[in-house]
Length: 307
Image 1 (cartoon, rainbow, N blue to C red):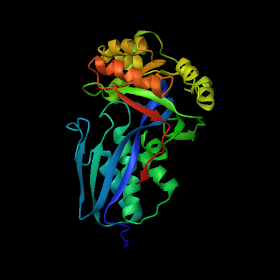
Image 2 (cartoon, rainbow, N blue to C red):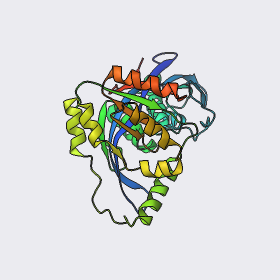
Image 3 (cartoon, rainbow, N blue to C red):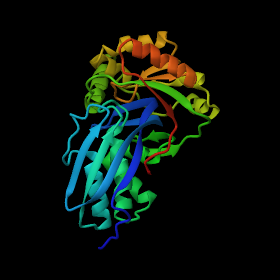
């Protein structure tokens, strides 16, 4: 199948995400958990450039530590590129330049954003025109957070987190994000959660996970105070058990006026919700003065898109 290149080089930007609410069901027979999540795409982005090549190659740089990011077929972006080629019957390759700004292994979906950006970039570069529905299917094969990075905005995710429905949001929400040194492995955090639940006798939470209606109501109203009351993350106890050093930062954020502070996803990145942009800046100053790297971000923002 021949393809006309649309451009010599394509640039796509995709957002990191925060889990505003994350409920985890029981472990299933296949080792996975059903979840219910409210995702919000925030203004911390991954940039991916794609250009024609004979083979599939990738170069990774960024404003965050990228030393632990694989540059082979374990890389989600490279796997995304191969999926597009396979689906479209494209025989050539691609070189991807990935510039990362989302903390690595930090619970903000940076790798998933890279994959979503690569799907859009390769589809555009090769002029394969697969369409949104097909790209979403490919995204779901790559991991639970990839479809959301493609979609952006704010959404409720159920099942493995990849069955998405858009959530209505008014206005913007301001966050201060504090990346922690060293990542946490998502499978390890889930496994630790299972251990904690077994120890505490919480073995049979029969109910299917669902997002608290209070979260959706707060988003529709554009009300950060109400969102703070209902926000929660079932993985937080496990993440804090594995990384007790994070507790002091959560307490500091709380004292500095954050409406809520929580572990993002499987951690160890912490996310603090602020009343507005001004409050977020004040919070950022306090956390920075304590020697922490604190980033002011806002959501919702769009998903993976051509620049």
